[in-house]
Length: 204
Image (cartoon, rainbow, N blue to C red):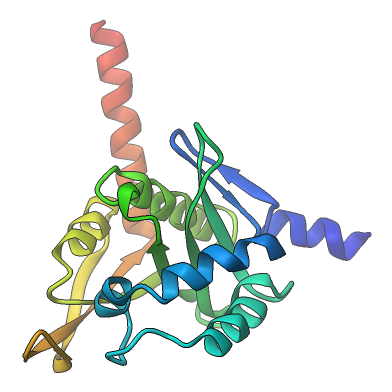
């Protein structure tokens, strides 16, 4: 019971936002995850290999990286409909150095560009800094994925470096961009947002 209560603190069953709800994965999510990871366009945007994952790879990924009690992973649900639209995870959680790597996939194409990925990212980052007490969250993104880069920048991530011409796509090499966000940057941005809200409230 004590262990479960501890897990429910650092990895709660759900985290709610305005447009999305993050929930721990359920076995029934596998069919959607298979469909997403067999999508050639998702593979082009996020996978180092040029081909989508095969079904055995996806099922292993689902069991070990999404469904396992030791995995820090959430399914992203559209709040208004409860529809499953994607997933978000932390990997390489390093308590000694206070860091983690962030990954997100919005699998349903009609959910792209709707701001739900940005809100899911914000919820995960807030949990990392405000509950887990991490110092840094990092990620990597391919240079041609401009929509993702803009979304990460809106949350506060900054480009920190490049692996030059690390990815072959669309007949040419592209850089892989390393991005990061620090806890003090996150908290400073939150304080600034609260001050602006207070000023608007006072002015109104």
